[in-house]
Image (cartoon, rainbow over all chains, first blue to last red; front, side, top):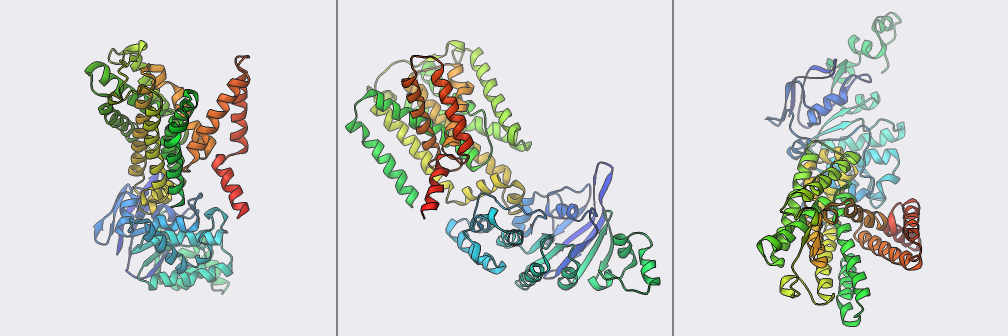
Length: 249
Length: 315
């Protein structure tokens, strides 16, 4: 469904993403993990058109979308959310979601009605008329998700929708994401909350210093020595093995 | 629906005014208030709904005024025909300014400065070319016939400016309840989020500045007819740009009635201070300025925000 091949981008002398390739199967939940500063959000930016790669190409549904403007990519069916939630501050929850709904619904009434049904899917039905600014962080994350969902994407790129939530809130959010997948939307998520990654995603890529260093089932990937070292430092895998413990991610 | 009814009632009431009031002073007050409302509405589309703060709406105003005046003076074209031409010219200048500044992603104060620069360049140009009459300006020949967009009394002008402000009202009302309006306010609140949701940010902003410029140019053409005279300072001077932005800021940004509330409040304030302090030159302006500062400081959401605040409390 989505294929990135050999994409690279540098900022000044820093190779933020270096020769990364990945392919996402339809109707799966895939994830992208890696330590802070690994280049995950930058890779997301390239996939969604916010950044132009210096090299490499991105294909979505068989079409070359490399460097295509974000709004065009969104119209093709790939929508992203942002790590730092960015609600339309002056507007209510309903109006926020309706902006997404409008993409495929020119009429105001249809968009507002659709926004309501999307809000129900992510558990925001009770807060439809609240100003977006008054929402808690957990609700804002849901709003971010709802807006993206309202564009009726085929592929949803979620940039840390679980970050900053407490365990209770994370466990409330997980079924929502799973239900989105069950509704026929493919999901690629950047995530730090490892429990959620293990729980939700069927396939995961690990990014470190701009390079994809491992991929596979989450359970296998987290046992990979290269991944452990990326997170815990050089020699950590060796020490863990001699200590006889299995790493708990 | 409620907003639409209020707009129509209000305009209907103003339309009946000349039947009951014959005082030139009052009619002039109403005309000038509506004229300021029109400029405010135009600015409000781009800034209040779109978040792009222009400090050079004089560029569009002056273009409308000069386009209409020059066509009449040099080619003897009927003034009514000049009006759509003036609007088109203003829209074209809007498109040019918008295309250049939005293409290069100018925002906030940079956008404000670029629009100011455009207005100033046009002012200097108007001052130096023959076509605009240079520093002397253009005097529109007196015809005093409604067929020539000149009227015997004030009532005719009142109806013209009323129709134009009604158009401004309907445009703002439409923005509050249409897809385009939703996209425009989304762009105002967060460009990246809007783009991620499939909004063509550049195009939305460009359309907003064209609409805004067209409406402003209509105001310019009206001004030229009403005063029958235009010069570079009146047309392209910063005072026009300030007049366009003061009303909506005082009245309430991004609201349908903000420009009207602001224009009316400022006009009344101006008349009051002038009448009370008329003997001591300058004092009226000082009071005007002080009240303005107080309003912006204590009413950040404008007069319309105050209404909404008490409305919510009462509910």
